[in-house]
Length: 446
Ligand code: GLU
Image (cartoon, rainbow, N blue to C red; front, top):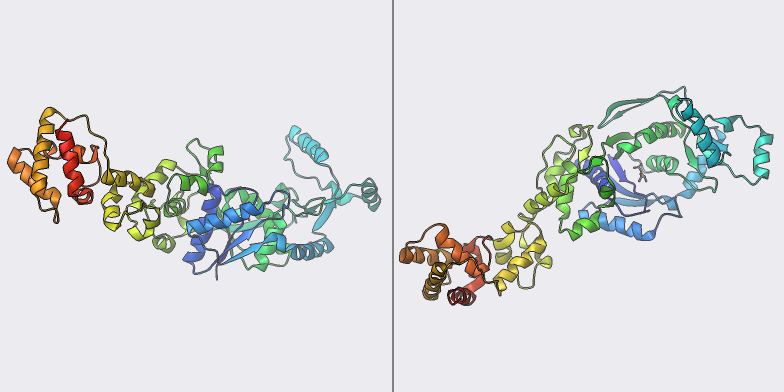
């Protein structure tokens, strides 16, 4: 069974790149009938906050990405300690005493010589006496994972295809800080093993982490999961801009974006499949496949999201939006205005038009005002229970000889105060006889 995990660090709010990672993990698990886990990567106690954990859960719930389970790294420290001890006994993690300044200086020297800034493993050749001297000075070691340079690293990435890394081109990664706290790399591998993760789906900024982590899986006697590294998102400006990094669910909700629009867009950008307005994710799940993903950065465009949102809102039935509509706006009214809204909240504007008062149009000529007087008189004689708009316009066509725009537009302007809007045949019964007569007569009397 496929098991994926979305593993955010609760050090901030999820941004659109994180949301995409969550969506891809969820889609892959759902497409395969597998499990999708939420894993809270909260080993950094100083920067992790409970309010961000709550926000992450809330964001997933709002998007409809229901996890099949939740795990927390801060509850698993004993498991990390035990594996760490085993790796230490096997010589795969080793203590290092360099200060950040010393490391920085060495990096600069290597770069100055035109060499890659790879950690030189000086700590591996420290004598016991040298180590004891550092300890006596009060230095505590941080720990690195020792890569095995004799084992080439390779994996078949779901998106990037065959990947190869020469371990000699990588620094032994730091896995534990001097204060004993964990960096994410090793706990993540231990979790992936213990939770039976079969597929790690994340952004391509993690590709070199994957190279190091593959050796950690092997060092812990496990076979690595499959990997899918998605190309990063870019904003309009090219790079994953600051703006993208700050766009999250709160912003989208404020903009009236439906969760389905976010899922539909982020599931498809960067793939060879078209972005389509799926109000229900079933077709997205059914067609989901990493082979459709390209290697080029995927462009995230808020205008595309807004346009997609409108197309999704146009499919939502009254029951799906009732709680967000003005009091009294029933299914008939929602369906009348729905084609003319981009956001559900826009329905309130049209409800105000139905309820009135409406702004008096000033673009009506004396002729059109006289026409509205005729319309008011005609409307008073109509049967309003059927289709008053067609009855009214048919009668006026006969009586005045008007047709097309001169027939319809003055009526729309008088009845709604606007030149454009929902189908008048749907709107007029909602405005109703009394308000319609009042609006037409008011225009006529000006
Ligand atoms: N906590 C890591 C991150 O947010 C997880 C990466 C991963 O999916 O392994 O970058």
